[in-house]
Image (cartoon, rainbow, N blue to C red; front, side):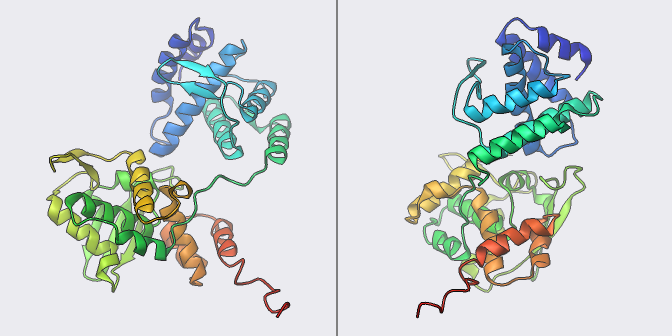
Length: 342
């Protein structure tokens, strides 16, 4: 984002101009250094921050620590926290979670870094203390979706129809679970990214949340003895029926059965998970696309799988992250007072 473009954003007289300019600017500075899902999140967060700054007649870049602290406080209170895309307007809404505040802060820091503004105002004590105070006030427990455990996945399989759409959905659910894949990773998979072998398959993940440099990561998935729940077999069946020869693996299927050439949206993956949870009689409000990834980690932790083996699939970089899943999965089993009230 050039200084000329930044100045135009900061001095724009209308929200429409801000929205249009920021959209163009976002595409320029969010290049290929971030995963696609992160780019979309940062672009949305910066749109809100720029509009908030304009409403308060203050500069967004470079921003002062006071500006950022005030922005965080407003967002945590729901003040000017929602961007209406069609109206190009920032309005009051629900209070923003601590996790979302951290992402918005990361987006602001990234924008300053790209404009060679260092040290970043996001790293000041004032901003850190403000975020800490918000965390203490709101609580830091994430609004995470529940895990779809291995037995839950097996339950969902019973409700998948023997149709072309059912074959696609079966492959999505089983691969999403077995590979601990994020929905953005599922939608970005292409035929050239998988290599089916006799005993399983290799899956090449082009980029992800933990691979911002897009170096690529490879995971191996073994065949399951139960063919009904085998992710490798499900992929083979879907590819054979869909006759996909190249490009995206998971695509939209029209009412007439025709298969699109473009990939599914992240939202469609989310809806597929919710739909089958509802059909299976589960509380669909508790589950989402991330429930597949979370379910793999938690199921493996309950089965006492070594954390480093789990990390080989999830691609977490920090052992502490996986250990949180392990500790949570074993809270009841490891309870020391089980025999005290016999």
